[in-house]
Structures are given as C-alpha cells and as structure tokens.
Length: 283
Figure 1 (spheres, rainbow, N blue to C red):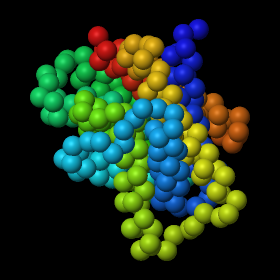
Figure 2: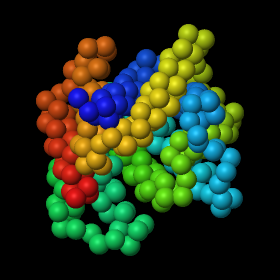
Figure 3: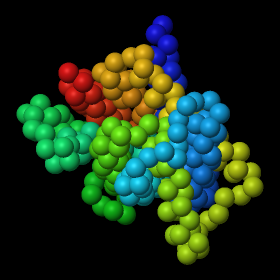
C-alpha cells in the first residue's frame, strides 16, 4: 500500500479519535482546547527543532497578524466542536462539523475572487438536506439541536480557518503555521479561563490532554502534511471525509454510543457530499 495512503489514514483516524475526548474529559471545553493547543505547540516546536528543517522564527512580520487570527479561529473552532459533543454526542458533533465544505463553497469565491460553480451550489444543497435530517427540530432546548448548532459553528470557523490557511500556506511552512496557530490559540484561551468560574480539569485528566495535544493534534497534523508528498490532493480530500466515520465507529465501541437512524442517514448524505466536493475541487 502507498506510504502516503497509510499516513493519511492514520492522521484522519486520529482526528476522528480526538472527538471522543469531549466525553473522556469532564472539564469545560475551554480547558480541553487549552490543553490540546498547549501540548500541541510544544510537540510541534520539538519536531521542528530536532526532526525537521523547519525555521519557526523566520517569517515576514506581517504574518503575525495572520497567525493571531488563525489562532483565534482555531480556538473557537475546537471550543464549539467539543461543546457540541459534550451537549449531544460524538456522532452529532462530527457530522455537523463536516458541513464545513458548505461554507467553503460560498466563502472561497469571496476570499479569492473565484467563480462559483453550479456543481458547488448543488453539493451545498445536498449538505443542507443532510443537516435537516441530523437536527430533529429547531427547538434550542433540545440537546441534539444545540449540539448541532455548535457543531455547525465549528464547521463554519474551520472553513474560514482553511481559507486563511490556504493564503498563508503560500508563504509559510505548514509546520510553522500549525505551531503558531496552536500557540496563539492557547494564549487567546487563557484570558476567558482566568475570568470565568468553570469546571477545571483534574490531575487524572492530564494524560488525556497530553495524548490529545501530542498524538491527536501534533502527530496527526504532521502525518497529514507528510502524506501529501506521496498522494494526490484528490485522494487526501476523499480520505479526509472518513473522519466522522472513524469517530462514530470508535464512539460505538469505546463509549457505547449508538447514533439514531436519521443521524446516520443525514451523516451519510453530508459525508458523501463532502467527498464529492473534494473530488470536484481537485479536478
């Protein structure tokens, strides 16, 4: 099997596994994301310093504003993602997050002055149908609806982050971008945590936070980037669509979470549309 295919499958598996930590950890999502970003940027620093030729501190000073913006987006994205999972389920959080191609479809032409294709509008409509199936009603007192709402917020902020990353990737090394995103996300999260009375992690949560930051974030991100040197962008887009699939399967075996039929059906529609979008964008 192609080395890159193995690497990206491991990376996507770890990304899907990360969602389960919303259930493993009982502390506030703010602390979960702070722990994730803190240990991730340390791991990325070690990797860049000792295992790669990445120059972390050589960049245009104008890039700092982009790094800060990316860090804020990353923090909000992961906060809403874990909040969605804690409120509802791993399946709802992962499936509604997978709506991000819907937002990319309409935001990308604005960011890069590109033409909106008819097929993209069609795919966006399919994703919207999937959302309607996943969310049972629009009563915000319903935990599934609330979880779905924050999952969609997670998808939206990830879409904006992906578009900013596309711009930044042209002028910066990907490892450096990931390092600064996590660094500034951690800094950004310290401020609300200091000002709020929220549930703190316990000592026994520390190993999970380290694993989440080092393995499910830094290592997964590095594997994902490395895989792109061996496989096509189309292959990467298709395999990335498996993230919620891996996450839902893991939640079934580890957490004994069984998604409702309409959630699975809506999820299949969203994931299928996501894979189709990935194939279209790589052509």
